[in-house]
Picture 1 (tube, helix red, strand yellow):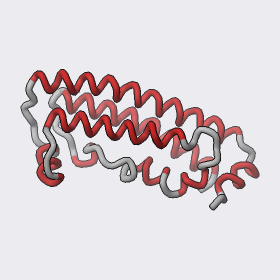
Picture 2 (cartoon, rainbow, N blue to C red):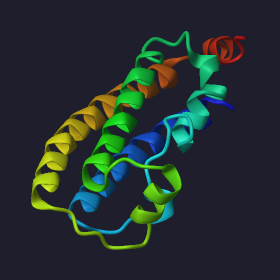
Picture 3 (spheres, rainbow, N blue to C red):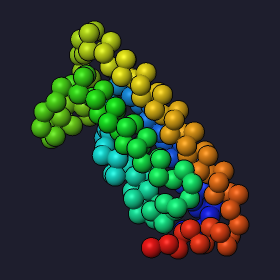
Length: 153
């Protein structure tokens, strides 16, 4: 993966996380989710797959490692919103209740979910700031410096 591809991946991650927050708000408002919008483990989303594969080559780039905690927190909060709205339970029935169907959510749960949503928004701002800072750092690297970071084992 070259420097331009890494920068494109980081820009895509910013857009993806903003969309994810919008999906969480829609969920709280009662909009049914499609399967690709169901929150997943931090290692299973597109950014997480990149971060834990090629991205690990960049772990020495300043700011890279701090993104992991922010990313994990974002996923955790989104799953907490799901749990508030739809309860815990076994994974298959949990997901089947979420996908492609409208759900009645009681007002108290919606209120609690909105409080968590405020946390999610703050976490999203934090991770998008971190991703933008990492993008600036990587963009400023010479090709030689980038190769040094990206070829580490």
